Length: 134
Ligand SMILES: C[C@H](C(=O)O)C(=O)SCCNC(=O)CCNC(=O)[C@H](O)C(C)(C)COP(=O)(O)OP(=O)(O)OC[C@H]1O[C@@H](n2cnc3c(N)ncnc32)[C@H](O)[C@@H]1OP(=O)(O)O
Ligand SMILES: [Co+2]
Image (cartoon, rainbow, N blue to C red):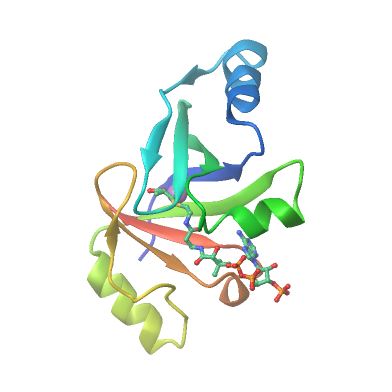
């Protein structure tokens, strides 16, 4: 079912500082900051040879990462995103296996313009999992 690791997301308390660490200290290529109002975050992607790092900063008053940052004031790894060929088939198979799909269960368009879904961290060894159809 899952294919390539599309990205590892890090929630950050200071987006500019995080961009500077990846761009200036680590010498990586970073994207512009893009607001994702449907997801309640602003994202910056760090392009790596074999995957991406998604820097996440809260957007708006109801961001799903706000509580995470309250618990992790310095920031932290927030989720892993795996690629799937068919997000509806993957969702249905996961639900049939008793896995919890977050939200209303319908894919939303994510930062790459592709459909994404999130799976409950308690079903995946304490790791929030995102699947993205590519
Ligand atoms: C668009 C872009 C893209 O890639 O395209 C994105 O990624 S958007 C990325 C932003 N969007 C999302 O994250 C959407 C999916 N996330 C969610 O629906 C929510 O964040 C959530 C349901 C995972 C957690 O919500 P919450 O923090 O308000 O809930 P709670 O505080 O009650 O947390 C419930 C339990 O899950 C744990 N928990 C919460 N967040 C995480 C996490 N990131 N990783 C691992 N565990 C987590 C808490 O510690 C708690 O465990 P305990 O009970 O033991 O204390
Ligand atoms: Co993501």
